[in-house]
View 1 (cartoon, rainbow, N blue to C red):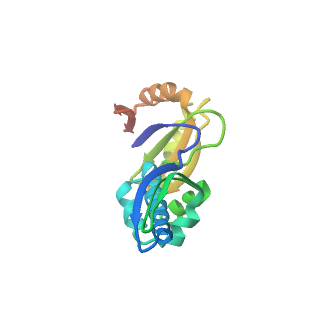
View 2 (spheres, rainbow, N blue to C red):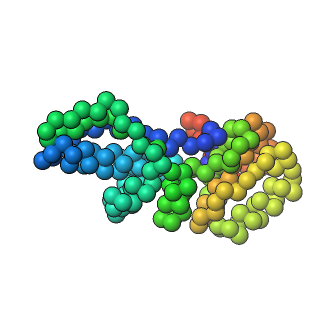
View 3 (cartoon, rainbow, N blue to C red):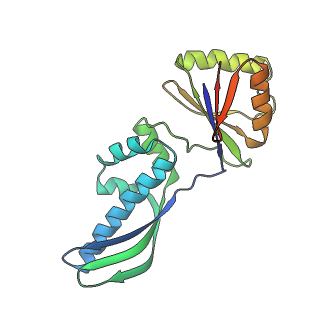
Length: 197
């Protein structure tokens, strides 16, 4: 089975958290707010590209330092403090390489990986019960009948029985037609293509 989703050239790694925290001092409240914002932004961003329940479960095991190491930059707007209160809109941008490493290190299947440049690409997750052996046979068969011509197919990741590939978004329609001509079943469910044989 293939699962396709349209993807832009680069993932959105930024999230803004509106936050208010209380503590014994304004400094302590701000520190608490920053830790909470980093944690929330990490969960929100990583969940855009993977299963949210998996991300939340693994995030529960992470330290504050782990979240800090994921951050590329932070900005603060609408900051207000009192003796024991801190509130702000905290914008956090994650470091792409750190997030990709986290996904890989934790065996988390994700949809973030995109090929650099070359315009918009479509991201496809191929789920195969036979894993790498079945992918090799299927890949050779599709190449032999010319389905890949002009497709610029790139394998991004092979993880268990999942193969993550990208290809030029402009070739999506032609690829679907070629798959159907080769005997594959293709259905579109809310913009996600499911392809099986």
